[in-house]
Length: 204
Length: 259
Image (tube, helix red, strand yellow):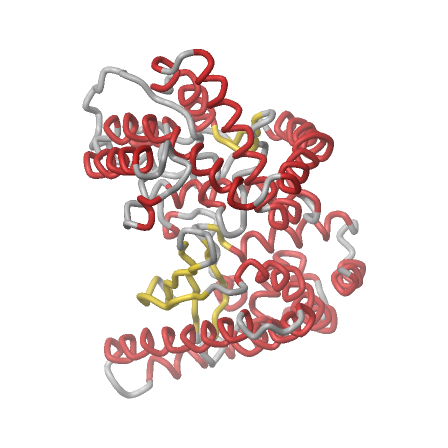
């Protein structure tokens, strides 16, 4: 019952947002082009912030905190968390969803933040941006010390009402899919108990 | 060597095996379009794959990883990168043959110039002046050739000692080993040295990317599923099968707002 209600409300919000976009003055095509530029601008900001952090020379712990702040500011964390949780989210209460979102946010920043060690002394450059299906894709190139450059794509959407990124594709590897696999396996290990999963994410 | 090519930042090097290719008759099949990706990735070998995965992890823990750290601790960085360069250089004859088999004369030419530059100015491939000159080469192998010829990737396979692969890439790997032009040209002693270099280079990569490899193998809730996903997505990317074709892609906004 509660689930149905909240789902309908979310659906309503989505429709309202959709209607607002459709009815907005100005030709869709012009808006589209403008939005590609805005999506690229968002990733410009993200990349500048990442470059600043990885070259700041701060302690790893300080960097992890900053990565979490960047993640919260520029990524659509609630949507990412819901997507990663998958079907298990449909039976969850709103409290469980928000508990999971917070725990997931910390977990992902710690897990992937540590990987950013490899980025220290490197840089990311923003290249092309384009509209794909219902979202925008911004293509960047990472230059790491002693490595050949490689491609990192950010997927950006404004469906939440703000322009935020919701996925990162590193040389074809879809981080949303990777996180979904990982969280799914952790949930299985907890016998499908979402509260136990939340507790585990807080510990990890 | 298992998993030595897997890395967060260099997953792309995944099993571009360093050996391969010979004077096969070049049936001009090139031009075949890439086979379509399956809608869902099937895994009919999962049970056997998982047991091989367990074996590979044990092998990594007991032999490969400790050897890699032994090698990394003893050999200084420049020595390790020299070994890695030689190993890449030894792979070039095979890259050239495969570029030709794939009807990619530009790539064949680039690989040939790279081989010439690094073997001479780079003193037998120890140094890599070609990259500094912008000649980065186009690493390839029989797996890619089979793909270009129209063979579908088949099922996911985890190969003992080697790691993640597919039916097609596993066949490519066997061809890489047995059809390496160097196999037919190098005298026995040199061939053995070449094998030794490849093993050291593999250990060097296991050492260099240890953070990432360790995190995938030992920090994942299901390292088999994680490795499979990383390998398949990255491999399709390498072969130019773009993200839009990715059957795994789900729009998270559709999940929530759509249905």
